[in-house]
Structure formats: structure tokens, C-alpha cells
Image 1 (cartoon, rainbow, N blue to C red):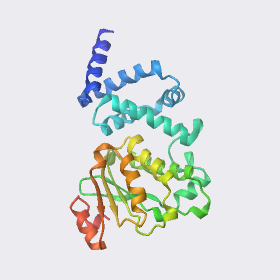
Image 2: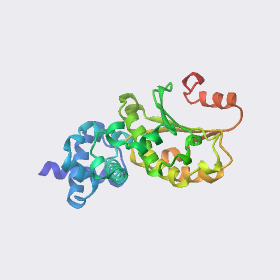
Image 3: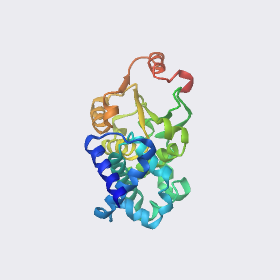
Image 4: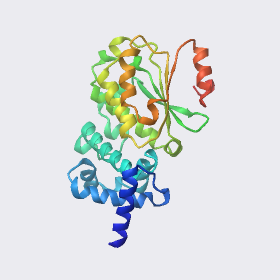
Length: 262
């Protein structure tokens, strides 16, 4: 009991100052924080999911949130709660507990949205070992009839696939947006806002870079929204590339993204 009180006091001190915790003991401290939260938020999606399928909450699952929040335990716990609330809202109580694969959690409409290739995890990584996630809004085919909710489940699924890669879990990912060919009708503010939230504020993956290549004519409409919803560490590090393809590739090469990686 005394040891738990000491851990809680240390955790409180770190949380007040948003100080990173020693990675060696971070998992223990996160478990203490989750135990404290269970007393006041027992009905939230995280604890409902834990009660139904505790095997989903192994150490690696928890470590992902710690890595993403730079081992600030309170922030990791908050992100974990946000993750499960979003997962429940998007997939429902039953599907949120299923394996995150195409056959388990994506329905027919979701698969149709997935096939459009709006968001893609590229097979290669950059020179720093970061995953490359490519977003092309011109592939948002609004005439096919799938819902925004289906496309958001696709975004979740792609990010989950990235999360399963141990190298990306460790090194994080770079988001590359290519809106050059999209029309104003394909710029859906609700989809952009909720998708950015999933990628930046919910998923247990470190977002390490953000490139917007060849902004389209609707750039001034969506960029402020994306910047507002991006994590603090990304807001001031968004690289926007104009000009020829050769110039854009040259600029990106300076951030560990040579042309052969794209």
C-alpha cells in the first residue's frame, strides 16, 4: 500500500509538470494511473473493453501510448481513453472487440471505401526508418455512396496496420498529403477533421513528419483546420511544397525522403 502511494505521488508530480517518466518504470506508473481512473471512469469504453477482452490490453498495447506521449504517463492514459472511446464510437460495442483486420471489422461498404486508396501505408520506409502514410483526397469518390463513417473506419484500419509494424511503432510515421488533383467537392471538412483527430490525437503512433505536396485550389480552406487539429509537435513543422515535381522531390529529400523512397 505504501509503495502504491509513493508511486501515485511520483506520478502526480510528473503529471503536474508534464515530465517524461523513466521508460523502465513507465509501464508500472501507467498501470497505477489506469487503476486510479477505473475508480472514476469505470463506464468508459476502455474499461468496458477491458472487462470483455482483457487480452487486448497487453504490455505492448500500453507501451504504444507511452511512446507516443514521450513517456508522460498522464498524457498516455488520456490518449488511451480517447482511443477506446473513438474505437467504440466508430465500430460499435461488438466490433470494437474484434481483431482489427479487413474481415473482422470492415463491412462491405467499408471495403468499398478501402479500395479507393484514399489513405495508403507505403511498403517502404524513409531513411530514418519512419513509416510513410500517403493521403490523396482525389481518390475520395463521393459518387460511390459509402459514408464518411466507412472512410473513417478505413483510416483507422490503415493506421492500425501501421501500428502492427514494430519499426513504425518505434520510429513513428510521416504523413504525405498529395491534393494536387482533387476537386473542391472532394475536400470534406468533416472527414478531414475527424481523420486528423484519429491520426494525431487518438492512435498510439508517434507522428514525426507532415508534408503537403502541390496544394490544390482549396488549400486555404482545409489547411487551417488540419493545422489546428494536429499535435503541438507537428503544428509548426508542417512542410508545404509548391513548384515542379522535381523541386518538391528535392525539398523532401532534405527530410530523409529521397525520390526512390516515394
